[in-house]
Amino acid sequence: MRDSGNPAAGARLFETIGVSKHYGAFRALHDVSFHVDDGEFVSIVGPNGAGKTTLVNVVTGLLRPTMGEVRFLGQDIAGVGPVELARRGMSRAFQLVNIFPALTVRETLAVAVASRLQRISNPFRSLSKDRELQADVVRVAEVLGLRGKLDTVASTLSQGEKKLLDIASAFALNPKVILLDEPTSGVSTGDKHAIMEVLVTAAKAAGVRAIVQVEHDMDLVARYSHRIVALQEGRVLADMPPDQFFADPAMISAVVGTRPPTLKRAS
Image 1 (cartoon, rainbow, N blue to C red):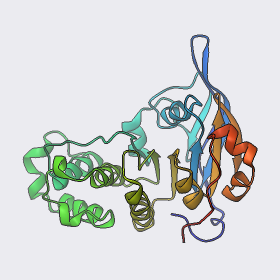
Image 2 (cartoon, rainbow, N blue to C red):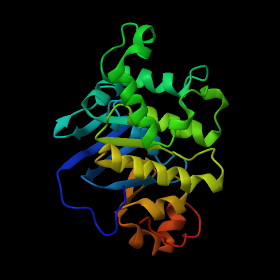
Image 3 (tube, rainbow, N blue to C red):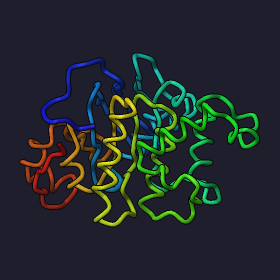
Image 4 (tube, rainbow, N blue to C red):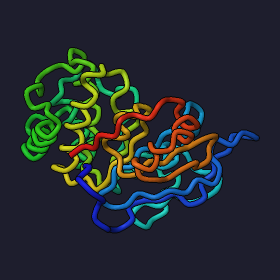
Protein backbone atom coordinates (compact mmCIF):
# COMPACT_ATOMS: atom_id res chain seq x y z
CA MET A 1 0.00 0.00 0.00
CA ARG A 2 2.87 2.37 0.73
CA ASP A 3 4.48 4.07 -2.27
CA SER A 4 7.46 6.38 -2.22
CA GLY A 5 6.50 9.90 -1.24
CA ASN A 6 3.08 11.11 -0.14
CA PRO A 7 -0.19 9.56 -1.30
CA ALA A 8 -2.08 11.37 -4.00
CA ALA A 9 -4.75 13.71 -2.79
CA GLY A 10 -8.16 12.08 -2.80
CA ALA A 11 -11.47 11.75 -1.08
CA ARG A 12 -11.61 11.36 2.69
CA LEU A 13 -12.57 7.74 3.28
CA PHE A 14 -13.49 7.80 6.93
CA GLU A 15 -13.12 9.89 10.04
CA THR A 16 -14.00 10.04 13.68
CA ILE A 17 -15.22 13.37 14.98
CA GLY A 18 -15.04 13.99 18.73
CA VAL A 19 -15.55 10.32 19.58
CA SER A 20 -15.79 9.36 23.25
CA LYS A 21 -16.59 5.99 24.74
CA HIS A 22 -17.55 5.68 28.41
CA TYR A 23 -18.12 2.62 30.57
CA GLY A 24 -19.81 4.15 33.58
CA ALA A 25 -17.30 6.56 35.09
CA PHE A 26 -14.41 5.12 33.05
CA ARG A 27 -13.56 6.96 29.84
CA ALA A 28 -11.92 4.56 27.38
CA LEU A 29 -11.87 7.24 24.66
CA HIS A 30 -12.12 10.98 25.05
CA ASP A 31 -12.77 13.39 22.15
CA VAL A 32 -10.86 11.34 19.55
CA SER A 33 -10.75 12.81 16.06
CA PHE A 34 -8.71 11.39 13.20
CA HIS A 35 -9.18 10.63 9.53
CA VAL A 36 -7.97 8.35 6.77
CA ASP A 37 -7.67 9.55 3.19
CA ASP A 38 -7.43 7.74 -0.12
CA GLY A 39 -4.11 5.94 -0.55
CA GLU A 40 -3.03 6.08 3.09
CA PHE A 41 -1.57 3.48 5.41
CA VAL A 42 -2.27 4.72 8.96
CA SER A 43 -0.91 3.07 12.10
CA ILE A 44 -2.57 3.45 15.49
CA VAL A 45 -0.09 3.04 18.34
CA GLY A 46 0.00 3.46 22.10
CA PRO A 47 0.70 1.63 25.35
CA ASN A 48 -1.59 -1.05 26.77
CA GLY A 49 -4.83 0.56 27.91
CA ALA A 50 -4.45 3.56 25.60
CA GLY A 51 -7.78 2.85 23.87
CA LYS A 52 -6.51 1.39 20.59
CA THR A 53 -8.79 -1.64 20.46
CA THR A 54 -11.78 0.36 21.72
CA LEU A 55 -11.21 2.86 18.92
CA VAL A 56 -11.07 0.15 16.26
CA ASN A 57 -14.19 -1.49 17.73
CA VAL A 58 -15.99 1.84 17.46
CA VAL A 59 -14.72 2.45 13.92
CA THR A 60 -15.81 -1.02 12.77
CA GLY A 61 -19.27 -0.72 14.29
CA LEU A 62 -18.86 -3.27 17.08
CA LEU A 63 -19.34 -0.50 19.64
CA ARG A 64 -21.45 2.62 19.46
CA PRO A 65 -19.66 5.73 20.72
CA THR A 66 -21.03 7.50 23.77
CA MET A 67 -20.50 10.78 21.94
CA GLY A 68 -19.21 11.82 18.55
CA GLU A 69 -19.51 10.66 14.94
CA VAL A 70 -17.93 7.93 12.85
CA ARG A 71 -18.24 8.58 9.12
CA PHE A 72 -17.33 6.28 6.22
CA LEU A 73 -17.64 7.59 2.67
CA GLY A 74 -19.63 10.50 4.06
CA GLN A 75 -22.19 8.40 5.93
CA ASP A 76 -22.63 7.93 9.67
CA ILE A 77 -21.72 4.32 10.50
CA ALA A 78 -21.74 4.48 14.30
CA GLY A 79 -22.90 1.14 15.66
CA VAL A 80 -23.98 -0.36 12.32
CA GLY A 81 -22.08 -3.60 13.07
CA PRO A 82 -19.33 -5.41 11.14
CA VAL A 83 -21.66 -7.24 8.71
CA GLU A 84 -23.32 -4.06 7.46
CA LEU A 85 -19.98 -2.26 7.45
CA ALA A 86 -18.41 -5.01 5.33
CA ARG A 87 -21.30 -4.62 2.89
CA ARG A 88 -20.48 -0.93 2.63
CA GLY A 89 -16.79 -1.60 1.99
CA MET A 90 -14.82 -1.81 5.25
CA SER A 91 -13.54 -5.08 6.69
CA ARG A 92 -11.38 -6.11 9.61
CA ALA A 93 -8.80 -8.79 10.40
CA PHE A 94 -8.39 -9.55 14.09
CA GLN A 95 -5.35 -9.85 16.36
CA LEU A 96 -6.24 -13.45 17.22
CA VAL A 97 -6.49 -15.75 14.23
CA ASN A 98 -10.19 -16.17 13.43
CA ILE A 99 -10.45 -19.14 11.05
CA PHE A 100 -12.32 -22.44 10.83
CA PRO A 101 -9.62 -25.00 11.69
CA ALA A 102 -11.43 -28.00 10.13
CA LEU A 103 -12.01 -26.30 6.77
CA THR A 104 -9.55 -26.10 3.91
CA VAL A 105 -8.20 -22.77 2.72
CA ARG A 106 -10.52 -23.01 -0.28
CA GLU A 107 -13.58 -23.63 1.90
CA THR A 108 -12.66 -20.85 4.32
CA LEU A 109 -12.35 -18.29 1.54
CA ALA A 110 -15.50 -19.62 -0.12
CA VAL A 111 -17.51 -18.84 3.02
CA ALA A 112 -16.27 -15.24 2.95
CA VAL A 113 -16.95 -14.84 -0.76
CA ALA A 114 -20.41 -16.43 -0.37
CA SER A 115 -21.19 -13.92 2.35
CA ARG A 116 -20.25 -11.03 0.06
CA LEU A 117 -22.29 -12.48 -2.80
CA GLN A 118 -25.21 -13.08 -0.40
CA ARG A 119 -25.22 -16.81 -1.07
CA ILE A 120 -25.41 -17.84 2.55
CA SER A 121 -28.75 -19.63 2.99
CA ASN A 122 -26.88 -22.95 2.71
CA PRO A 123 -23.36 -22.00 1.66
CA PHE A 124 -21.73 -25.44 1.89
CA ARG A 125 -24.26 -27.18 -0.38
CA SER A 126 -23.22 -25.63 -3.69
CA LEU A 127 -19.99 -23.67 -3.20
CA SER A 128 -17.85 -26.19 -5.05
CA LYS A 129 -20.10 -25.94 -8.14
CA ASP A 130 -20.34 -22.14 -8.17
CA ARG A 131 -17.87 -21.11 -10.87
CA GLU A 132 -18.05 -17.39 -10.17
CA LEU A 133 -17.47 -17.94 -6.48
CA GLN A 134 -14.61 -20.41 -6.99
CA ALA A 135 -12.89 -18.06 -9.44
CA ASP A 136 -13.00 -15.35 -6.82
CA VAL A 137 -11.60 -17.74 -4.20
CA VAL A 138 -8.64 -18.50 -6.46
CA ARG A 139 -8.12 -14.79 -7.13
CA VAL A 140 -8.00 -13.93 -3.42
CA ALA A 141 -5.72 -16.88 -2.64
CA GLU A 142 -3.41 -15.83 -5.47
CA VAL A 143 -2.91 -12.26 -4.26
CA LEU A 144 -2.29 -13.42 -0.67
CA GLY A 145 0.19 -16.11 -1.70
CA LEU A 146 -2.07 -19.00 -0.69
CA ARG A 147 -2.96 -20.56 -4.05
CA GLY A 148 -0.68 -23.52 -3.42
CA LYS A 149 -2.48 -24.15 -0.11
CA LEU A 150 -6.07 -24.10 -1.35
CA ASP A 151 -6.75 -27.72 -0.45
CA THR A 152 -4.81 -27.64 2.83
CA VAL A 153 -6.76 -27.92 6.08
CA ALA A 154 -6.45 -24.64 7.96
CA SER A 155 -5.35 -26.25 11.23
CA THR A 156 -2.21 -27.63 9.56
CA LEU A 157 -1.00 -24.26 8.27
CA SER A 158 1.93 -22.48 9.87
CA GLN A 159 1.11 -19.56 12.15
CA GLY A 160 2.15 -17.11 9.45
CA GLU A 161 -0.07 -18.85 6.89
CA LYS A 162 -2.99 -18.83 9.33
CA LYS A 163 -2.51 -15.07 9.68
CA LEU A 164 -2.54 -14.68 5.91
CA LEU A 165 -5.70 -16.78 5.67
CA ASP A 166 -7.43 -14.61 8.25
CA ILE A 167 -6.40 -11.51 6.32
CA ALA A 168 -7.42 -13.17 3.03
CA SER A 169 -10.91 -13.71 4.44
CA ALA A 170 -11.14 -9.96 5.02
CA PHE A 171 -9.84 -9.30 1.48
CA ALA A 172 -12.48 -11.67 0.08
CA LEU A 173 -15.11 -9.12 1.08
CA ASN A 174 -13.65 -6.71 -1.52
CA PRO A 175 -13.13 -3.88 0.97
CA LYS A 176 -12.31 -0.30 0.14
CA VAL A 177 -10.68 0.00 3.56
CA ILE A 178 -9.20 -2.79 5.65
CA LEU A 179 -8.44 -2.56 9.37
CA LEU A 180 -5.77 -4.82 10.82
CA ASP A 181 -5.50 -5.51 14.54
CA GLU A 182 -1.82 -6.43 15.09
CA PRO A 183 -1.55 -8.39 11.83
CA THR A 184 1.75 -10.07 12.74
CA SER A 185 1.16 -10.88 16.42
CA GLY A 186 2.29 -14.39 17.30
CA VAL A 187 4.41 -14.61 14.15
CA SER A 188 8.17 -15.09 14.24
CA THR A 189 10.31 -11.99 13.71
CA GLY A 190 11.66 -13.43 10.49
CA ASP A 191 8.16 -13.83 9.02
CA LYS A 192 6.73 -10.44 10.02
CA HIS A 193 8.10 -8.41 7.14
CA ALA A 194 7.28 -11.17 4.64
CA ILE A 195 3.65 -11.11 5.76
CA MET A 196 3.49 -7.32 5.58
CA GLU A 197 5.02 -7.27 2.10
CA VAL A 198 2.43 -9.80 0.90
CA LEU A 199 -0.33 -7.81 2.56
CA VAL A 200 0.67 -4.48 1.02
CA THR A 201 1.16 -6.01 -2.43
CA ALA A 202 -2.20 -7.75 -2.16
CA ALA A 203 -3.91 -4.51 -1.17
CA LYS A 204 -2.63 -2.81 -4.29
CA ALA A 205 -3.69 -5.73 -6.49
CA ALA A 206 -7.15 -5.90 -4.89
CA GLY A 207 -7.86 -2.18 -5.19
CA VAL A 208 -7.93 -1.54 -1.43
CA ARG A 209 -7.91 2.24 -1.05
CA ALA A 210 -6.52 2.49 2.50
CA ILE A 211 -5.18 0.38 5.35
CA VAL A 212 -5.43 1.11 9.06
CA GLN A 213 -3.47 -1.04 11.47
CA VAL A 214 -3.15 -1.27 15.23
CA GLU A 215 0.45 -2.31 15.78
CA HIS A 216 3.03 -2.41 18.58
CA ASP A 217 6.03 -3.41 16.43
CA MET A 218 7.69 -0.08 15.79
CA ASP A 219 9.85 -1.40 12.95
CA LEU A 220 6.70 -2.28 11.01
CA VAL A 221 5.08 1.03 11.93
CA ALA A 222 8.12 2.96 10.72
CA ARG A 223 8.43 1.02 7.48
CA TYR A 224 4.85 1.04 6.22
CA SER A 225 3.00 4.03 7.66
CA HIS A 226 2.12 7.28 5.96
CA ARG A 227 0.83 8.62 9.26
CA ILE A 228 0.94 7.54 12.89
CA VAL A 229 -1.93 8.23 15.28
CA ALA A 230 -0.68 7.86 18.85
CA LEU A 231 -3.12 7.33 21.70
CA GLN A 232 -2.49 7.76 25.39
CA GLU A 233 -5.15 7.34 28.08
CA GLY A 234 -7.89 7.44 25.47
CA ARG A 235 -6.80 10.70 23.86
CA VAL A 236 -4.94 11.50 20.63
CA LEU A 237 -1.41 12.42 21.65
CA ALA A 238 -0.05 12.82 18.13
CA ASP A 239 -1.04 12.49 14.47
CA MET A 240 2.01 12.90 12.27
CA PRO A 241 4.26 11.36 9.59
CA PRO A 242 6.71 8.68 10.79
CA ASP A 243 9.84 10.79 10.27
CA GLN A 244 8.52 13.42 12.68
CA PHE A 245 7.19 10.84 15.12
CA PHE A 246 10.41 8.85 15.39
CA ALA A 247 12.56 12.00 15.57
CA ASP A 248 11.03 12.81 18.97
CA PRO A 249 12.51 10.56 21.72
CA ALA A 250 10.09 11.98 24.31
CA MET A 251 7.16 10.97 22.10
CA ILE A 252 8.52 7.44 21.66
CA SER A 253 9.06 7.09 25.39
CA ALA A 254 5.57 8.38 26.20
CA VAL A 255 3.81 6.16 23.70
CA VAL A 256 5.72 2.89 23.53
CA GLY A 257 8.55 3.14 26.06
CA THR A 258 11.22 1.99 23.62
CA ARG A 259 14.04 3.46 21.65
CA PRO A 260 13.04 4.59 18.14
CA PRO A 261 13.82 2.14 15.33
CA THR A 262 15.97 2.97 12.35
CA LEU A 263 13.63 4.34 9.73
CA LYS A 264 13.52 2.16 6.61
CA ARG A 265 10.58 2.79 4.37
CA ALA A 266 8.86 0.20 2.21
CA SER A 267 9.36 0.77 -1.48
